[in-house]
Image (cartoon, rainbow over all chains, first blue to last red):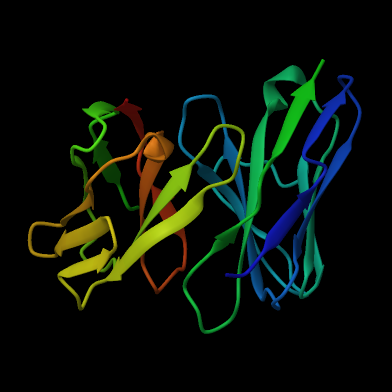
Length: 115
Length: 112
C-alpha cells in the first residue's frame, strides 16, 4: 500500500515557540492531505483539509492563524503550530489521498509536547 | 454534520473467540465505510472497508457487514489472536465532501 511519513515523530518545545511538522507521501502523488489531532484515549478529529497549491480549509473551531498549513507540492504538506501552548500538546496525524481514490493513507503521527 | 457512534468502548475476548464492534451513522448519503486499527503511539491503519453498494466483505479473519437501511455497520474478527489487541475505529465518508468522520473507538483486548 501507499506510504505516508511524518517528521518528526515526536517533539518537545517550550511554550511560545513554533513547531513545524512535515507530512510526505513517499510513493504516490497526494492531491489532498488531511491533518488530524488526537488527544489521549480519544478519537481523531479533523483539523483541516489541504489541496495542493491552494489554501487549506479549516474545520470549525480550528484557528487558521495558529495552525498554519502549507501544501506546496504533491508529496509534501506541513503543519506549523505557532506560539504553542501546553493545551496544544497532542498527537498530530496526517493522511494523504490521491485524486480519484477515496482511501486515505495515514502517517505514523507526531507527538507534540509543549512545556 | 455526520454523527458516528461506536460500541462497545472496550471489549475483552478470549483468544480464539470472535469479536464484534458496531457503528451507526446519521447521514444517509454516506457511502464509504472503512475500519482502522491503531496501535499505541502509531497512526491508524486501514484493515478493511466497504462501499455502500455491497452488504458484506471478508478478508481472512476479518469481515464487515453493512445495513444501509438501518445505517449501521459492524466489524467481525474471528479466531482472535493476541496481536489483534489494539484500538479500532470505524469511519464514514460522504463522497461529496470527502471528509472522514471517525467513531469514538473500541479498545480490544485479547486474553491469552
